[in-house]
Amino acid sequence: KVYIHLAMVWGVMGMALKPVLGLAQHVAPKYQGPAPTVLPVPLPPVLDTPFPDLDRAIAELDAHAWVLKSTSEKANLMRACSTGLVNVSKQVSDLSERYKGSWGNKEEWLPMFCVVMGCQEYVTALESGGAPAPLKLRKETATDQWVAEVFPHGMLKALLPGYKGEVWMKPGTDPTQGAAYCAPEEGEVRDEGHIALVLGAGNQYAVVLLDIFHKLICDMEVVVCKISPINHYLGPLFEEALSPLIEANALRIVYGGREVGEYLVKHPKVHSIHLTGSADTCNAIVWGSPTVPRVGVPPIVAMGKSITAELGNVTPYIIVPGPWTDAEIKHVAAEVVGGFTHNAGHNCPALE
Image 1 (cartoon, rainbow, N blue to C red):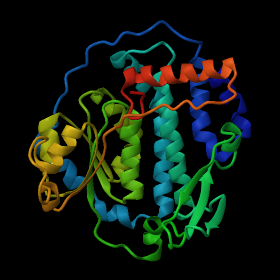
Image 2: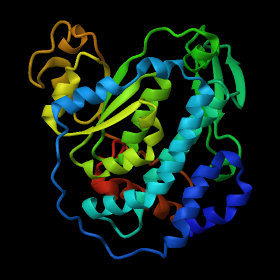
Image 3: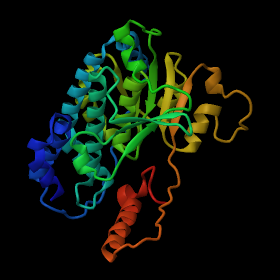
């Protein structure tokens, strides 16, 4: 019913939501209610990208051309990628269900909604020169902080009643934005550009795609992305959907396990690293081993590389006292259980 409802309101939601609702319209005719539970099948073997091909992929990336691109050029590329992702969404969902299993609710289609929405957010930001006007701007005099209300905007307010997202500036700073986006327009290209390595998440394919976009748009770095051996079967579909970025020499997708990852981490042309994974993997990259004493300058820093990591957490679910009805308690209970069981609990904010 939700999918069908989203498809019905397609005509009234406005340009900002068209890619997202287009995906909903793509799904709606095919969703006929819960199907039988799907049990996973064994993963196909991973074919590692040979080291010479890794060198070639990195050599083909054009970091300088990327930082010189205008915000409108990047917006066009992101818009094309959004269309590409919608086009492969059914194949991504079907393959994910095949190798991960499914409760029969087409839940593997849901992450693509998040990716397409994120893609559209980047398009909106880029089309406004990296400085979209906030919904509201106020000054908290007690803390000397500017606060910008940025979410939800447009027709999203109708879908998310009661929600509000704010950005709080550091005390004493002005509410400026868009410096990274605006640099090419202003003729202030800070450097020749850099190459980032994204070690893709194995638990959720949406994280892989959004990490690529973040590095490209927010950090202004071109990307070589190693797909995790856990979901490497999605790599060719990602390459198809993101072909505009590949053709612009802003993205390369490679495959393999630990040896490929270690080779890329130590590659002299890789400037920054982002990973989604375990604390042991992060410590192995930063310190050389998950067990060595963490004293002094980390080897990865000594190599002149920066690293960011998303390692999950232990999420508490806090139910506070209140005048809750039985229906509300039942609804929240179902959400708590759903958060624990979805994706077999392999979500970074999943209940522990």
